[in-house]
Image 1 (tube, rainbow, N blue to C red):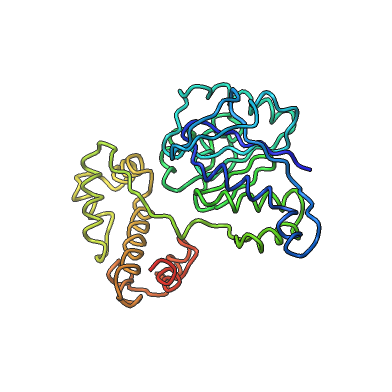
Image 2: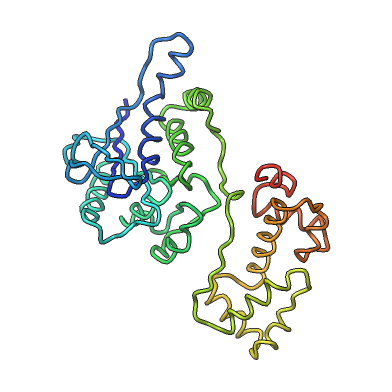
Length: 323
């Protein structure tokens, strides 16, 4: 039986504590009972805190731990719930949590984060040079805090051998299923998937991502260029013309634009055009061909390919899913 510890802290999102716990505890139980077989639990799950005292979840519901984290004799897997936008490395107990996680990892425990829990996991330094994911809305904050981590917000789950991350809040279920398969194989994971009605093979959160342009960079020339691009999506946008308008050389414009926004000009243009298309698909009845033209793509086939590349869905599939 695998031993799992869920490390709760102040302002944790309750669902990112409870959902993994429920998913692990049902493994070997719910399917067996449903099929008329005796239950055979596969995981022993405990909630722990730094000092063994209760903590208050983000929704003001108290979370009572089984014990302090140091009281655990041994553990195979440690789950790090999300604190969302409330992660603060200056919080009481943060340093103790990080040191404990590093110690347990050295002793063989696997570590897995849910959503914003990736901030805690990255704070250990163990993710440096490795791939991770978190909620797409936290991407800028994460990249700024942990530039040495390869952040992939398009992925729902990342696996770096013994370090795992789940993307958004509800990805706690997908991550848990992934780990069930990792520890006990495909068949047990499929049983859990069928009983809980959670898709085992959902691997991308790209359909949910909306691009949030960086505009707090303080470069007024680049800000004007961004605003001009957003107002002229339908037109053919030429970087040479943009540079002339800004009073810069093309090389200067490219360098300053990338420095200010984090994106190359062409990449930025594609992102804001596809986001505009997403809004039109959900909020209007415009044909896909018309939306392609209004967002600056005369080649409909190219638009469809680019849209699917960014969202993992065709325009029609996206409209059907999010309307």
